[in-house]
Image (cartoon, rainbow, N blue to C red; front, side, top):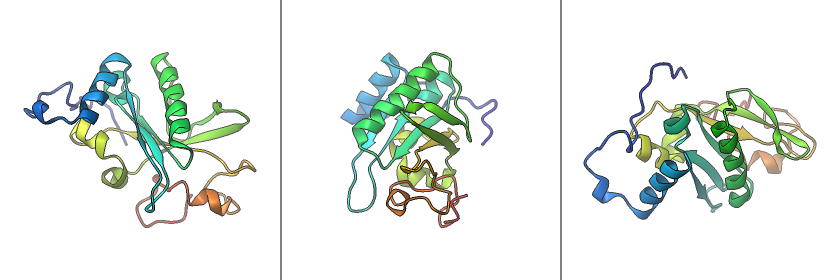
Length: 176
């Protein structure tokens, strides 16, 4: 997704006339974005799917893609996303297809561009903050114990169920 020349349409940059309707989560996220530069939402595992965490505010503050991670403990993902956010705040660059070896000890992660058709299903708080796309999101993917990623044919099935392939169109299960 090209983001050249896109202005921020977030609730901090524009008053949409509904600030008195913000819930506690909205207020907390705004406070985090104003003080730290981003906020991290944690959605626990349930009977519908794995737990996940994602950032809101990186695009507003640094013009860096938001980040999302699935399938690990939500508090661990919160910590990992904050680590990546700290790097972005310090001037590090993140991009689709980037491999990082500085996040999880002994394991690389790969960043993939999330297809916008997934935004409504997973990133409602980001939509509420930015009001509408485009704002880029990168999925932070972790390997199985043997170092294989989701698109590898021998990737551990147990791990496959924990990380949706959000870089693909919904319904496309190729995983490449």
